Image (cartoon, rainbow, N blue to C red; front, side):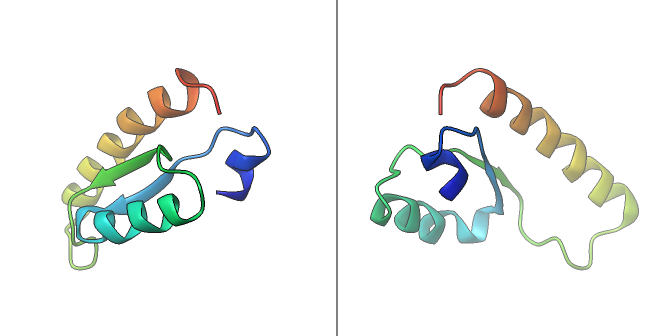
Length: 71
């Protein structure tokens, strides 16, 4: 969130289990529209294929969030 306040595009990658608390924290810091790339929880215990799928999804979520919006 510090980078975003400086005008540097930034995105937090979180799992869906932590989305509500992450959004509350962003709002409390004056960044209610802070972007999050939200992926399925959990990460631990995933197979290599599951992790690869989550990584690919994360990249697909990140690119537009970083390139198509103004900080």
